[in-house]
Every structure is written in C-alpha cells, then in structure tokens.
Length: 412
Image 1 (cartoon, helix red, strand yellow):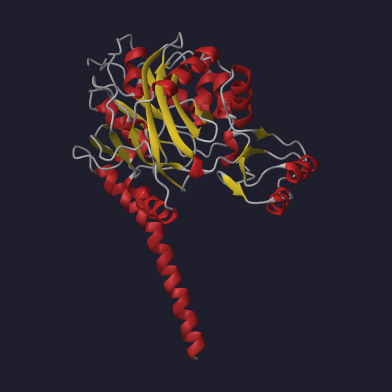
Image 2 (cartoon, rainbow, N blue to C red):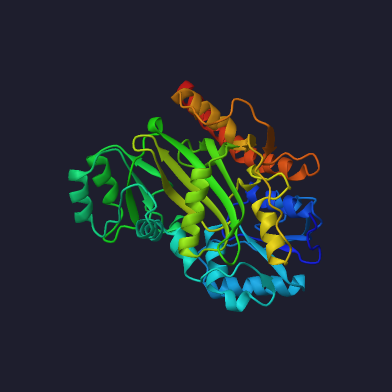
C-alpha cells in the first residue's frame, strides 16, 4: 500500500500507563510504511519512546484529571512543534473524547474522523452505551444504574447473584473510582457492605453476571469512514485476559464471525459513528445472544491481532482514509494469534487452574503477533521488561528484608 509519508501520525495518550503495547504497535504499524511517527509519553524511557520507528517523543506526563482547556493547549503546542498536519491516534477514552469535543480547536494542525462531538463520551459511558443498545435493539446484560443506597438495598433483596459492579463513567478509574475494574459480587451482604462506601450518589452500575462456563468473549475491531461505512472490519475471540475473565486481552485469535460483524456494522450505522472502534462482546450460550459489554471509541491495545490479506489494520485504515488514499479491501487473516508476553503467562496459569477453555479458538495458529517482541524493533521489549520486572523485584526484596528482620527479632 502507498501511504502518504508527508503526513505524520501522533500517538495521543492521557494518563499514566507507560507499559502500553497498543501505542508501540501503532508506531510500528505506520512507521513500517515510512510514516513519520510522534508520541506523547510519560518520560523518555517508556517502550514507545524507544521504538526505532518513532521520530520524536513529547514528554508530557498527564493524569487524566486536567482541565480540557489545558489538554487542548498542550496538544496545540505539540502540533506547532511538528509543523504540519498530523493524524491523531488516541489510545484511551479520555483522548478520544477530548479530540471529538474540541474538534474545532484541533482541526487546523490535526487530522481525525469527523465524529459527532458528544458521541464518544456517551459510548465510553456504561450508562450511555446501555441506553444506546436499548434504543437500537442491541442485546446487553441487564443493568441497573442506582441513584441511592436505598435503591441498592431494594436491588440486593431481588437480584440473582452473583452480579458485577463497574464504574459508571469510563473516566472515574483515574479520579475517584468506586470499584477497581470489574468487580464480581457474590451475595447481598457483600453488595451492601461495598455500597456503604459509594456515597449518596453511587457512581457505579450493577450488571447481570454472565457465567464464564456459559459464555465466550468476542472482540470486534473496525474502522468506519465519515459515512459510517466499514473500510476495515475484523472479528476475533478472546482466549485469555488479565485479570482473568475481566481485564485486558492477553491471548486472542482471529475467527471469522459474519453474524457479529453484521451486528456491529448495523449498530455503528444506526448511531452514526466514524473512526476506529474496539468492541467487547460476550456470547451467552444460555440464550444464544451476543451481548455488548464495552465500546471503546478508539484503537484497542490488541489491534495488531487483526490484519487483512492486503496488510491493512485499523490504524493503517485510519491514516489512509484521512489522507485521501483508498483502503484496500481483503479478507482478514483468520487463525492469526496475538499474545501479550508480560501478562499471558500469569493468565495461562489462572485459566489452567479454572479449567476454562474457549471452544472457538483454533487448535493451531496460522501466525503469531507478539505485543512486545519484534525482530526489527527490540528496544521496546527490553524496556518493558526492565520496567515490568523492577517493581516485582523491589517487592520481593522488601518482603525478604521484613522476614529476615522478623526472624532476627524472634531469635533475639
């Protein structure tokens, strides 16, 4: 494919998460086509900052709690330093929402899909997504949005347990999260104990639990143009995640699923979204329905799982479309596998203990894409390893010292 090498790409991230393999994957994907790549990083020693395909990193530590005006001003400063129109590649909801809601201010130095300004925030919200699913007939787990402790008490007396608690708004994980990630709650007493700490206006949702023994986790990644037409569409099955069954993808396969692709495309057309999407679905074998759990209005960290026979992934489709180039159509590379090295090992151990398997996962991969290791770009892997291992080694050292002191004290 002939990418426009005169138009750079900028990886936009808001918040402190330096070990992000998705950003590294996007830098490599476009960089291998000769596209000049830039990235916002926490410091100069993140894996992304050391990729051979990165022309320059802009060190800008953020927390996700900054005022939008401050973030927009920072992006505009970076745009002036790059000095030419640049395709924005957001890697988190905060960045995707910021770009959409401040499109007028960012449109000069940057290129991005012309999505309706309020839509990404609504899709990133668990409540907003559920309301859109209900409006358009898309199956989703039964969900309650409690407004008070009394409402939770009533729910606890009637609900079938276990249930799942999640933060209502995606951004709350960086501010004052009521729960940390997806939290499984086993019974009424446990729910009421937790709810006492959620305050008078609980910022959570309570959702039907889909038992893993009766469900399969599916993912859809795609890129939609300004008319909400899919220019690249991919489906796959998640084999392992970390934390188990509720976290980020650790191991996944490309599996053809025309029914799910059609459902996703119809939903996107109905709501009028354009840009990259990363959708999490759970197939409930009890009623034979695919239920939409999460809608990420940006590239997913595991997007490099998916590529078609023409070499297109969603990030390449984004850059080609926004620079006026045709996006080649081709079949997805079925059977391809994606592995996130630093989290798949503990995930594998956890899944083996539980005995859980994914029926639709191929017995053998047709090819494997590693999140970190790449023969032509090894520095991100070694940097990840150093930053990933160091906290664990420090913890073990502190644990050894405390036990040694305890042993000495006991002996004395």
